[in-house]
Image (cartoon, rainbow, N blue to C red):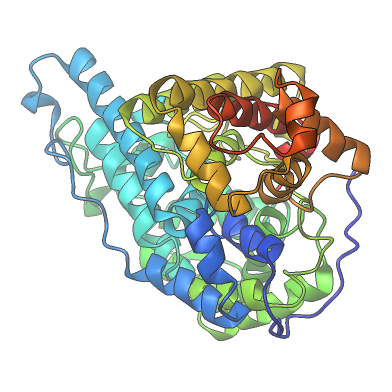
Length: 477
C-alpha cells in the first residue's frame, strides 16, 4: 500500500528560523546526517543559506586521489584474482569513508549508482570500477546530458550493457533500450521498438577493447554509416547526434522523469505532480543542469513540510552512517570495515546493485531478516565504541543535554534528536527513560544525586541508544 503524500507548500523558498528537526531533516536528505555541531550551526542560518552552503561545498569538493591501480591493465597484475579483490574492497571502504566525511556529494553519487547501474561482476576490472565511480562523483551535481553522454562511453557501462558487442554487423540493442527505459525517459514513455533499434545502430562502434581492463575506444569500421530515423529525425547519426536528438526531441519527458525520480528519492515516495512539473521546468530551462533543481527543491517550503519528514525508509548505508554522523562517533578502520560488511549483508553492496534497475529503495529495504540485521549492525557500532571509548557516550550526553541530571529530559532529548519527528506517545518516552535508568536504584534519581558523572553513565547511554535504534521510527528519515 503506497504512503499518501499529505505535504503542502510550494517551491517558494522556506522562510523562518530553522528548528533542530528541520536542520536534521535537511542533512539526512542532503547527506548522511549531521553532527551536533553542524546542527547547532545550521539553526543560526536561513534555509536558503544552509542549502547553498551544503550544495556549494559538494560542488567544489575535489575528487578523491586516484588509487595507484586506477589505470592498471590485466598485464600489470601478479595475481589478478587476489589483487583485484583487495583493490575493490579497499575502494568500497574508501567510498564509505567519503560518505561519512563528504555528505551530499556522496549521497548524490550513491543515487546515481542506482540509476546508471553497472555491476562489478560483469566487467571485473578495478580500473574500470574506479573510472565508473569517478563519473558518479564528477557529474553528481553537474549537467545531466553530459553525464549521460559520458556514461554511455564508460568502459564499465560498455561491458555491462553489451555496448562493446554493438557493431554494424550485429547490432546489440541492450544499452539503447536501457538508455531510454531506465536512464532518460522511463518505461514505455515516448519511444518505440524501432527507436531502440535505430538508436542501437547509432551507438555502434565502441568496441575497441584491445587490452583487458584497458580503455574502450571507437572503431570507425564497426560503426553503421547508413541513415537512421530516431524520434522522426533521419540522418547518418552517430553517438553524439543520438544524444542531441534525444535531449532535443524528448526534453519534456526527460525532465519530468528525472525530477520525479529525484523527488521520490529525496522528498517523498509518493509523487506530487505539481511540484515535479515545476522542477522539470527548471531542469529543462537550465539546459539539464542538476544544481538549480536541487537548490530549488531543498530550499522550498514544500521540502520542509512536516509530512515530508520521516517519510522515507533509510537505506542500510543511510541507517548506519547517519547514526555515526549524528552521534559524531569516531569512525576508525574497524567501524568503516564493519559498515562495508554490514551493507553487503543487508543487500546494499556498493558496485553491485540488485539488477539493472538499481535498488528499489524505501519499503523494499525492510523485511524481517533485514530489520534484525540492522539491529545487529547498530549493536556492533554502539558496543564497539563502548568497549573501546566508553567515555565518548558520557560526553555525547553532556553535549546534547547541556549536562542535565534529569533522566526523563535526557531520554526525550535523545529521542527527539535521533528520530525524525520524535516519538509518538508519552509512554514511549517513559519507556526510553526506563531503559536509561538501567539498574540504578530509583531513589538516586528522586533525590537528584544521579548525574552524568556517574560511573555507569556510558553503559546507560549505550543501552538507551540501542533501545532507540530498535524502534520502527528509527528506520525512517
